[in-house]
Image (cartoon, rainbow, N blue to C red; front, side, top):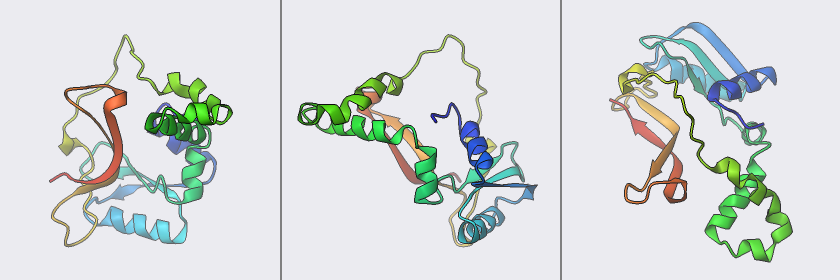
Length: 171
């Protein structure tokens, strides 16, 4: 299943017993991290914090808690994406194993950005999102393993982009 939003992914995980909801207010200063660690150790499930102190936004952790959960999330898209990555790295792969990669080629249009006529979004500041401090000696709040998309300023576009997971300090 290809998700249109993180919320769709969260609902799918919950429907399949792979998510725990925390409805009570949780402090992002060490408490969220402690809960996250307990849930990971004992249940290996994603955690949705619905009420984060000081933020109007919910937060989710452990989306990729286990290999099985990651494979579940990407169950319909992983194979075609692997093929597209292989083609981008070495286009000659298509001629070496065309039948193995034909499915990836048919998924290629879905990997391209889509222009929408209307945009529904609200501009927010970095301070609006939950400021999570994980460890007592951390230098401030961090986002750990966010999905970070970047492009070459001189050559914008998906073919000159990078999607990675890093640890970003917020404050």
